Length: 271
Image (cartoon, rainbow, N blue to C red):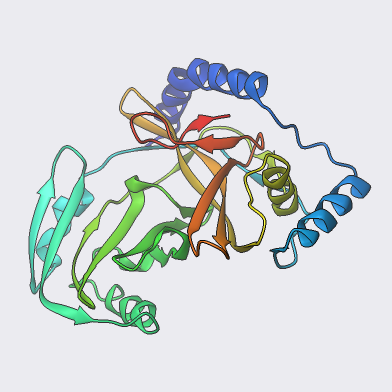
């Protein structure tokens, strides 16, 4: 995609992006503006309520608005794959694979086995561009996120998802973005500590729980004119010690707003 095309995409989505950001700021229920004393008090209160967590980084960072267009790279290269039955969905740009020889895995070795499996081009296309995503995985699905120089992509448009049935990986689905283009200059993001303390202040972290993962990744914001726009999002995994249930909270890294799933299942509705 040349610079002129990037410029056109940016102009098309600029108004929609501005409207979205204005709405996010006006609807924000919690503004992260804690003083050092306030943050310390919040962390102390969390510990009193038996909420456990590791060291939270207080450094802010920088990230971008990114754009991409769907490509048929998976369809164009599927002849390289062997020992599997393949189907390609032209609408969702998704490759669907059923392995001829399922892979036996356990909870302790599945990452190691699949890390090795995806490195072979006859097994998975562009496998070296994906990394294991524990926050997105479960006992029945093992998820790898497309990862580039700017970070991982925790979005269905760039994922490799293995299906596990009775202790065996029987197949996978794959989506792939050929490239991501920077649509705007870098902007500051909220720190890990700001995000976690704000989630607690918003009653999103229950008592007697544990913060198991925090990760900054890109995910879809909106689609316009055949292009997809992505923003950085903090993914915070919380384990409830009472119910033994794990949940993942998503927070807009630019604004600090908590992201809720929209009615159509997409995760870019901000509180």
